[in-house]
Amino acid sequence: MSERPGGRILVTGGAGFIGSNFVRVLLDREPDVTVVVLDKLTYAGNLDNLEGIDPDRLTFVKGDICDPELVDRVMTGARAVFNFAAETHVDRSIMNPGSFVLTDVYGSYVLLEAARRAGVSKFVQISTDEVYGEVLGEPATEDAALLPRNPYSASKAGADRLAYSYFTTYGLPVVITRCSNNFGPSQHVEKLWPLFVTNALEGKPLPVYGSGNNLRDWIYVEDHCEALVKLLRADGVAGEVWNIGGGEERSSLEIARLILRTLNRPESLIRHVDDRPGHDRRYALDTTKIRTRLGFTPRVRFDEGAERTIRWYSENRGWWEKVKSGAFREYYEKAYRL
Image (cartoon, rainbow, N blue to C red; front, side, top):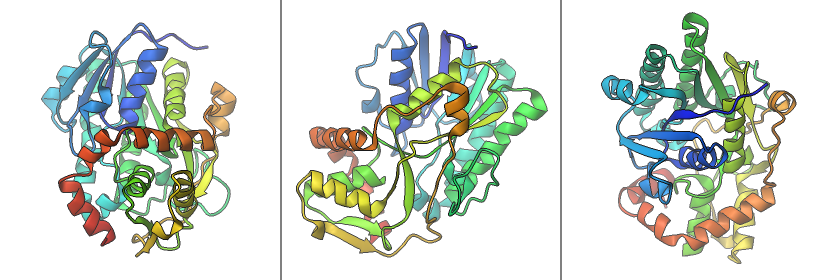
C-alpha cells in the first residue's frame, strides 16, 4: 500500500546534480508537493540547476546543514526530508578528508536531530554503493558488510549507520538508499561523464586512471529520482536499506571510447594517468529488493542515457564553461597533472 505525498518536502543539497534532478522529478510527479531546498552553494552547488522551476512551489535557502539553528528553521513544517547534501568526490576526499567528515557525518547528525524534534514522517538518507567497498564477486545485497576504502565512502558509511541508529534508538522513520553511479545533465565537471564529454568537445585529453578497467554500475539520474519518489510514496519502508542501480556495468575506458566515438573525436585523446590511491576495481549492487517489493525498474537504457548526456553537455556550453573556469583549473591540474 502506498500514499500520495502532499505537503512540504525539505531537500538538502538540492542545487547539486542529483538533488536538483530529484526536485524536478518530484514536483512533476507530485502536484500537491512544495519543496524547500537548503544548499550551501559550494563549488558543486549551482542555482542554474533550479532555473525555470515554479517559484510558488520552490523555496531556496542558502545555508549549511552543519548550522543547527538554520536547520531547525527550515525543518519546521516539513513532512519529509531527503538528505543529498554531502561532499561527494573521491579524489577531493583524498586531498581533504576533514571536510567530508564534517559535512557528511556531522551535518547528517544535525539534520537527524532536527528531524527528530520536528517529528517528520520520513527521513531519506542518500548513501552510496561505495560503502560496500570493492565488490569482486556477487553483487552486494543490502545486508552485505560495509567495507569503505576511501575517506568519501567511509564518511558516507558513517552517516548511513548514524541515520539507522536514529531509527532503532529514537524511532525516527529513516530510509537509507545506496545507489550506483549516476550520470545525466547538470553533473559537476569534476565527475567522469561531464569531464570526458567537455574535454572531448574542447579537444583536450581525457584522463583515465590506471588501466581504465575499473568497473562501475551506471544509472541515469532520472531513474534514480523515480526510485526515490517510489520510496517517498511507499508504506513500511522505514528502518530499511534500499539498493538502487541500473544494472549497467561499464569501465571508464569503455565510456571514454563511447564518448569520443559519439563526438567523432580520435581515441588518441585518451590519456592514461597515475591511478587513484586505493582505487576500487568494481562496485556492483543486487537490486532484487527494490524491484520485487516496489516494482522499480530503470526506464532509460544505458545507450539512451549516454546519448542524452552527451547531447546535453554539447548544447549547454555556457553552463559548463562557467563551472570549468577559476578554481576548477587548479584542482584539475593537481588531480591529473595535465
